[in-house]
Length: 368
Ligand SMILES: Cc1cc2nc3c(=O)[nH]c(=O)nc-3n(C[C@H](O)[C@H](O)[C@H](O)COP(=O)(O)OP(=O)(O)OC[C@H]3O[C@@H](n4cnc5c(N)ncnc54)[C@H](O)[C@@H]3O)c2cc1C
Ligand code: FES
Image (cartoon, rainbow, N blue to C red):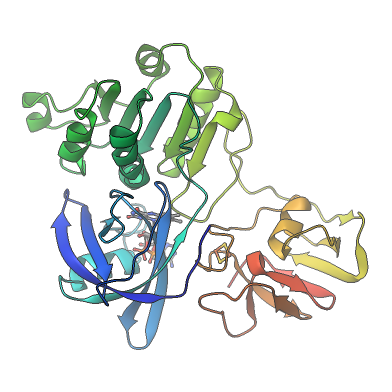
């Protein structure tokens, strides 16, 4: 993964793609810099929300990686949770939708992420998304439609045509060559969707739908969408005999590891334990709130690795100091940064993915 500092990019196009998703096309403010990325990766944007408040947000590239002079992201306007309408809506996405206009400058870093199309693989590809999880898939489809002969199955599930973004672009890309199948599944199609035959199946993606779409084969599957979508479809794919190493996935929130066969586990309730391994016992790390104590293992790359090795599941995303998802409170002790983060947290907070202990530590994973 390449990682660079923040640079100014200018918004050169803003386009409403659906009732909830708007795309922004960005180009380097100096007119010459490029941000080469691989299909599936994301960028980090630092948003000045006003009043001295900034926010870091990640957005997958949704455009053609072959043209790094035009970077496109497609952003869903995040409302307040439906069961808690009293909460404020998503800060970053609403700021982008409402306040960022063509001509404005945005601070961008990246590219980041390991959810990347494997272009060396000869296997057929399944691009399987729900909601705004389609963005990295569209970028992958750009590459696959132009530079590959591999069979591609683009499967997308969303509510209905009103919120379905980039529909025409997907169909156009699929028509560029034979061997690209598209399937749209609408949960609640409206009258226009029925009249226009805009979807291929209705309701939720079912086992029968997948069996009908995918002939027996050895696929590379890329999966991205909201948490319930990921849980249901991971289980479905595994039940169809697809090996876990063939299923690549990305979460658009703090990442969780999808390791179980039939359910995506909730973060485990870990009983206090003491783990011993080939370690430096002077550098004991005490993780709260579980109470887990582990000695620092010099084979670990970072405190994030150490926590995971101890059976804990802290949130993370880029694992490279770019997104601050792994920020936690340092209660006692000190750490060193072996990689300089883009935005070093202040006030007793540290980033797990790019630090190692220099003394015994107590860190609180319940967060800042
Ligand atoms: C690798 C990666 C790639 C991504 N790519 C995309 C992409 O291509 N397109 C895209 O649209 N998004 C993408 N995202 C998601 C994106 O980074 C943001 O998380 C998303 O836009 C929401 O940010 P926000 O600032 O609008 O919401 P936030 O302000 O972070 O709020 C999130 C939610 O929390 C609710 N909330 C507010 N206050 C509280 C509270 N006190 N308690 C509980 N809930 C509260 C808000 O109402 C909102 O629903 C990606 C994320 C990752 C990690
Ligand atoms: S996971 Fe992104 S900064 Fe640590």
